[in-house]
Length: 423
Image (tube, rainbow, N blue to C red; front, side, top):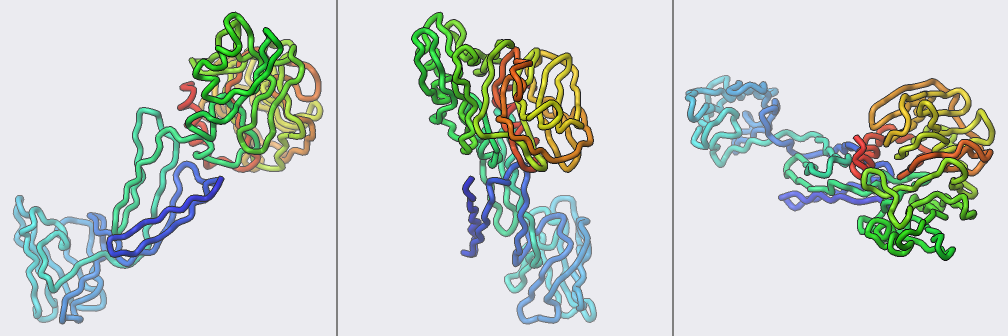
């Protein structure tokens, strides 16, 4: 994904530009910048005081966060002392040279309730500002529920709030997937990218469908009343052209059944019959040498959801049997209870720790020997190296990353759950 730039314009005419690497930008990210004057808040403990014509009491003053605290000049005799408190107006403050009380300046409390020196009405010959330092800009780009608004605030000498998209595309939450299969458009909210090629059983015709055509009735109308539509190609939306295909019509999974779109929880899905249907990539073996993340959405009662093995013990696969099984490299094994559940299942390798997540929550870990070197084409819906253990059930989404995504995983899962409303 292309980098984005963020420019912050200040009231004094200065501006700062930040470059954000969107391939690694998800969740909460922080950037640090230098400022001439930190903002003054109730947590401020250091201030810059400048008194025209009196360098002796100009400088940095320190105090505590308590209301009405005394402030003392660092390296000098200047003091700012609270006095004359009342419940309505708070304090007035006396700024003076503590060694001889000359000069003295009264900081009046005519500005309403005053509990800090800088909140008072101050003589024009005096300025009180924050000291120079650094501040952190925090940008929150996590996915949030559809009904929740979210903003990002940049604090400092000028406060800037940016309202962001509360339903971001997955590709904008985090980029860099090795492969991405879905019936929603991961790259365009309008749904103008093709997501599947469908074979129509009534006349043996095939055509591509955009994501919006899958959901708006165009696909159903083209297949026709009472007819079936089968997936001959599930397009890879990562940009890597690692499409999952099935050339034999008798082995193609179904997307339209008797004229109706296959759905799970009212969202499009692809149905596998458990006997012969599967999809395979060409020239793509998901075989990360290190950390990875695999995220899937399905409801199956049996079979290998995804498989990357050359043989029995190598590679990575997810399998539904009496339990939902995460397997890695022959020595990683995590079994999760349950079958035939609509779940968001995630496998994550970080170092030598394999973690299985179910619906966003950690459900088990195992220590493994890290690193895969398989070459067999990645297969969806059965064992990769032999025609066995076909999936019975439906699949909606498979996203594969061959890099460390541990920091981004919560945002990825939240984005997917927003779409399918699983948990």
